[in-house]
Image (spheres, rainbow over the protein chains, first blue to last red):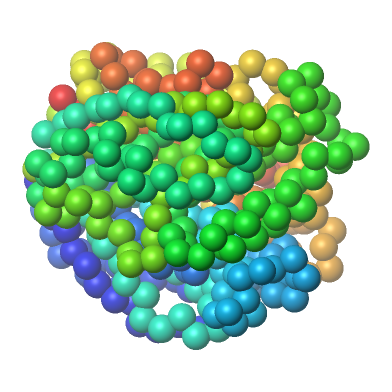
Length: 139
Length: 139
Length: 139
């Protein structure tokens, strides 16, 4: 079976945010899949999706601070500055982390590790409501 | 349905290049898929695939300059130098960006965001014609 | 057809390790797939999966040294230090490299480039036996 859903996430501030529940709620067909895969693509070039620690909020704070230091807003190199100082660093972070995730489905649920959760990585100061296409396949 | 195509991209200079049209043209079965996924793998370890801004060429120039500074050709650390000074940095960039993309298909076309385009990230000075395997599944 | 297998890798020391053979051996259904995809997810947030050079061991040593310098154990910024000094850098590396791979299958085998091999990227000093979910689909 195949199913595809498009939905918008609630707007988040810049940083790393857990969105596992929001994603699962947006794909009600999940519980009809015994074995399969869920693919997620964020339809933007200045935000990304990751899978990481779902417990300690400090991990998400530390991720944001590492990426801010690695990809600096004030680097003199940037040519693409028209859309604001946070835009070009957002593109670099999006290329580093990536815009999509593919996740296994088993017995009607995502099959993730105990400590894994889906992150929205919001790289803009005001990114707004980010749109995701979810594509589910399986049997 | 399943389809698989293998094709070579035109050789590009080192840097980030938009290849959306070249990829779509290489997978004519796309328009027979209502809902599905297109998977792309570049068969090399010194180039990668990304999805990012399809309009401003400055974004691609800034990406190339950020990655060149982050992964330096002249780092004293490199042991693997046999294949030239641009080779080991290319492997690091390829691991950071990744060799594959999975993209949703809807109504016979790639379902991407308005500003998203497929990039060939060529990390070698003379990478030649890079080969891609495209695997399409859907209904 | 769909098949899903869950298995544990042999424990490895911190660093980048070739695991192609171990993965292929864990998915015996591979040889029944003419055209398809194999998806791998590592069920952890401090290790990752990559696809890179399968010949020179120096490439894997250089990757480890680059990532160690880029994501420093002793950065004063880390808040999340409860699980040891190698833990938060492991989360950052895992987000940079990613926890999953999707690979094409053709005529019963993985269709990779000549020089491509699957890496376990072990970011902890003592990560133990890492678990992987492998999901195979195809015809």
